[in-house]
Length: 255
Ligand SMILES: NC(=O)c1ccc[n+]([C@@H]2O[C@H](COP(=O)([O-])OP(=O)(O)OC[C@H]3O[C@@H](n4cnc5c(N)ncnc54)[C@H](OP(=O)(O)O)[C@@H]3O)[C@@H](O)[C@H]2O)c1
Image (cartoon, rainbow, N blue to C red; front, top):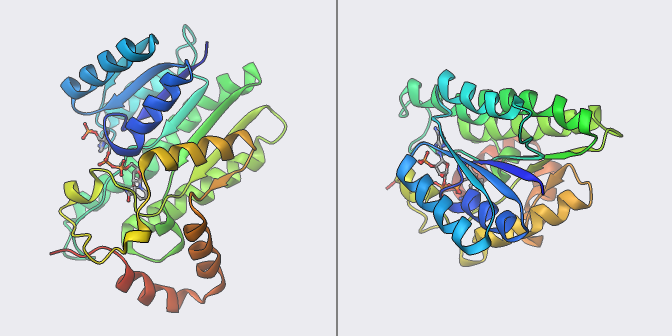
């Protein structure tokens, strides 16, 4: 029996990872801030799939929250073989309209938490010669778009670099870069999505299925959906100065 730790496991893509991994027979450690929702999710998964589910309430925008997750990852009693760094959020508004403390929280959750939890998880995985880390980025990593896009670009670059460093150890790392996915993300941030075309939406289940398939194939980057693969391929060919304009027009609205 293997154990997976998922951050942001109570909603959207993280909850879809939790359901899928529980269905596959993995024990789980679920991390998010809302303790009641975590307990409900854990009870539901245990009842439905008969797996063991620990809950770890933690705010990954704080040192104490990241520290609690690091501690669980280093604890050898029931080792974590799969780490899904998924927790994340968007800020409503363009740069200078978003308070600096919210931008700093974003860097803490999207960058520092991922750096520290990956660092805590990898030595044990390498020793056991087995393990996987999925760090959730976004298609926004490839389109200049303020702190959100920059933080997700870090996730892709960091993850692919470490994946190369750990080649041959039996430990896999993969960045997952979804496009628009139907979750609570946009509503929580107060972002309108009326200008997102119907073809642009993915389901969280599809994102998770494609991610786990790509992880099994040993890929270091997963971009779910043919259309988003094409978007990223084109974005990589265009000069970055042009890309800023495209991403500003195509992305969410703030009404
Ligand atoms: N939806 C999209 O279109 C889309 C596209 C590309 C990438 N992504 C990325 O996918 C990931 C998951 O997003 P989602 O769309 O599934 O969002 P979501 O439905 O809003 O779920 C976010 C999850 O993260 C948790 N979370 C948020 N802030 C946290 C914090 N400070 N500490 C601990 N947990 C926290 C939330 O639980 P609590 O509130 O209880 O903490 C919740 O479980 C994010 O990294 C996001 O950037 C999303």
